[in-house]
Each structure stands twice: as C-alpha cells, then as structure tokens.
Length: 394
Image 1 (cartoon, rainbow, N blue to C red):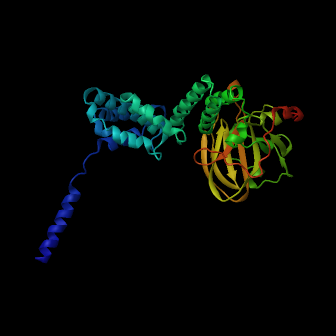
Image 2 (image 1 turned 180 degrees about the vertical axis):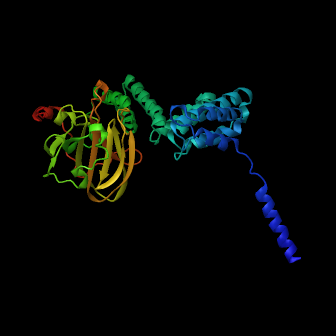
Image 3 (image 1 turned 90 degrees about the vertical axis):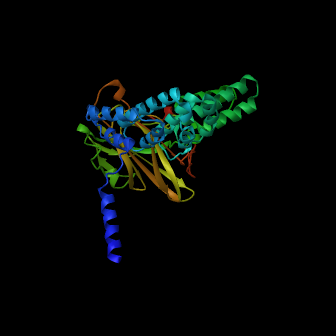
C-alpha cells in the first residue's frame, strides 16, 4: 500500500508538469511588445500583440498599468494605447465594471513609475472629474513631477485669488507653499515673480533649492570624435587644485568659478569661451552635518559623469537631448563632514546653434526634492559680481 501511494503521488506530480501552463494574455503580449527595437524592429509582432491586448476586458486595466514599470518608451506607448482602448470601451459600454478603486490604489502608490501613475490619474479624471480634482492637493510633495505640477498650479491659483482679495499675508503663505513644492521652471518663475512684485518678498532661489554655486573648474581636455567621455583625464584620479594638467592644446590649471544664475547653471563657456570637441571638469565640496541619504539632482544636455568622494556615481554619454531641473535624480550617501563632488561635462563637435551650451546645474536634496544645505554654504553670488570676473581670452 505504501509503494502504491508513492507511485500515485509521483504520477500526479508528473501529470501536473505535463499540463500546459494557463496563458496570460497580458503578460504574453507585453513580453512581445517589450521586444520592439529601434527603427521599428519587431513592430509587426508588437502590432499583433497590441491587437490582442485591446480586445481584453476591464480586468486587464490594472495589470497593464503595472506592466509599464520596466518597459521602455516605445513599449509604454503601445501599452498605453491598448489600455486607453480598453478603458474607453468599458466606460462606454459597462462603466460599473471599471476597477476604479484599484486604479486609485495604483495611483497613490508612489513606488510605481511616474508616467503610469499620471496615466492612472488621467483615467480617473476622464470618468470622475470631481474625484480627480479632490486628489490633486495630495500631490504637492509627490515624487511624480507630472502629478506635482497640477497640485502646485492649484496652490498658485489660490495665492492669486488671495492677492485679488487683498489678503497679502495669506497669499504669501500659499505662494511660499507652492514654491516649496514647485520643480517646473515656468512655475518657479511665475511664483517668484508674484512673491517679489505682489508680496514684496525677497527670495534666494539658489539657496531655497540647494543649487551648488561655487566651483573650481579645469579644461579644456580633448573630446575629438567624442572620445573624451571614456578617456580618463587626470582629475578623475584625484583632485589637486594646485595641479597643472596637459589639456587639449596647452597646459591647464584649476580656476575659481561661481555662477549667479538663479537655477545654478554652471556654464563652461564663461571661463573658456565657446568651444567644441572638449571636456571640462567642475569640483566643489559639500559639508554635511550628519551621515545621511540624499540625492544629487542634475540637469545637463551634454554627456556627463559624476563622482562623490572619489566614487563614480553615474554618467550618460548622450548629447543635446534637452535639459530641465532635476532631469537626473541620483541617490547617494553623504558622510558627516566634507564631501567632494566632481562633475565631468563633455561638449561634442556639432556646430548648430542649439548645440552651443556646455553647462550643467546640480543641487543636493532629500528624496522629496527639499534642499539639503552645506553647513559651510557661502552667500549666493549676485549678478553684479560678474563684472569683477574677467572672461578668459580666446
């Protein structure tokens, strides 16, 4: 009897292994779509997979939202399109079957990627505008810049209404809240103008956002044929501010540099004049009052690399893709005391007007984007100081 039971169990296990796994149309189709490559590679198969997805019912909505995590830009477009077809059809034919509670839960889970969460919000807004409007204030300090944008706009509108009513103190409070949360340059400029002109408030935007303004810079080094990104020039082996290096055409040394730009723009074209096919380095020090996690948030349209305390953090060998505040968010560990930051910025050889910029901006903040200031932060440089800084000779 004992061996018969064992034989029956073995047979059951073997038979279960032989039964084909149940197909998952969402996972299977998404896997195909994710294989879509550049220049339309795999698009025929992706189109067929999209057709399968678009015919699914409302139960596929949340899984499709979840599948956007880990998908590339092209795949996300396919998935989004299929999801919108399903949602629109269901909202028209069977609105009660829409899983709106699950969509809202997905939206409020900040671990999901920003584009997918914004799509979830848009889905909610398409069927319940009042519900969506009520959710907006929750996103003032959300990690999603897309969701934060609408929440900040609400606060700007509130501030404007209070100004119109002559309630300057209340308006100032609302606008300051908006400024604390704003990450979009257009919104920041608008809020700053309102605070300065309507509320007569003095602002130090670089300090407010934690932009790093004081640097030492050295260059230019060679980036002919874009070889400079991978080339290891001497500053990468350790910064010695008294050192003299072999540059692209002559010996180069470190220079003191500061920026007066309200958004911390470090412009290599100021000390070196516009150059092409070159590499520059910028070095600064940051004093932290404690060991702590932080983020370095960078904006740069050139190829770049960053080191913190001599350790490589990240880099991108990509040029002229546009630039914005907090374009790249790099998690780091600050140590108590002095921390060193080295930035490498590579300028390519293109001569179009829109390729002239050789610059970056960087700030130190926590995971919400709130500034972390160095304990030895110098006063923010003023624009009139530029007159005392002589430009380099060509």
